[in-house]
Image (cartoon, rainbow over all chains, first blue to last red; front, side, top):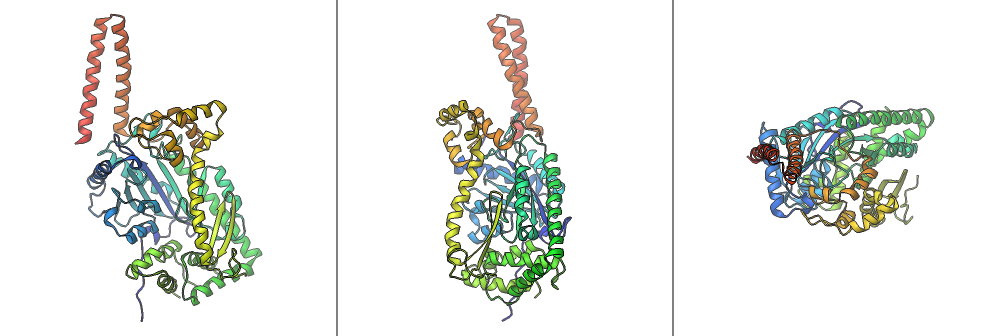
Length: 349
Length: 179
């Protein structure tokens, strides 16, 4: 029985090739804000959460969603699977689904913009764009921030700036991050040095799904640690500079592999392609590792496979996207089997 | 290429992980059973890994601060009921008031974690105007008290008028903000 292809997930940024492609997958800016006079969500009762949600969503619909194309969802009205799919698409974080009461998500019309309500902070504005375009991502988020501020009064302190539930976000509330695909640095073992240099430069290194997630598919998310005592412009341009350096390191490692370890490289990528072509079930983490190496083979022109966006494929074969595609009730084995099928379809094999 | 699980060395590995611990990156391949066991322990470890970063400012601080911190354990925010101890455990503050109540101890945390204690970024239009007026109001109220204490009633009357004017502006602003 021929099954259809799983629908392409997420917003346009997952399908576009931005500057720095294919090493820089995407740029994200996230701004944390809270409402004056209300306790932060963690200490708020149901009534306060409802009030905050009402105020934020009204401001979003009056000042941001003028085109009416924004989609607003109350977390408690979504199925567990839909909530997890949002996390897989990087619209929310895994913690968002843990406690749904009073939470909401407003998503822009396929443009990578979103506003998360009542997670760690009352307001989390997010903008994601393809490739290395940190200024563009920040400008998009900042525009929403300025628009919301005409409707709601933010919690702000003269000395400390915008107040957030975690002091790790206080000040600008701005976290800028880059999603990077760095297989050659991992294979050559050079990634250790890079991570150590990044840590010294005040940069967090995390996995595909951010805080607390492991690294899979050689995809790394790096972001600024400090949000206080720096201007937004500095945070943005600093990330831009740092990403350039990391990308240079990855390019050098790829060249070195091609020059000095070509057999090892071609063996690795061909083996991965072989498994993708022949496997009949595959778990999520193995699949991410496989597409990472196949992608490396495509980028280095070792494999005769047409180009694909590693994140778009990675999200589409996520456990919750596949479960939704299979009708919501599928077990792990069925999901793993479908993943092997979709993997071949998405890679046109 | 070894196909067996790094952990039990018996089953075929189907889970592949890249692990970052400190500055070290290592790859592990596991069978499903061992991976499930590992996941339980790493989830707990991740949770713990986040807090010490935030709180290391307290541990690394100089001697006198340690005493401050011990006594500030008992400090409770009057606005939301969060104690400093709660913050140390969870890593989250309960409300804007916590920043004021835990002021000095928090500055230690901020210095270590953010390497700064002052915001130099975006200033919200409304908040900056409101904050400026509130600051001016405080100054005038202090001045008024001094004038009354010194029995300078004429000067005090003039200050009182200024205070009323600012209070009026702040009220108007509050009303337009809640419309």
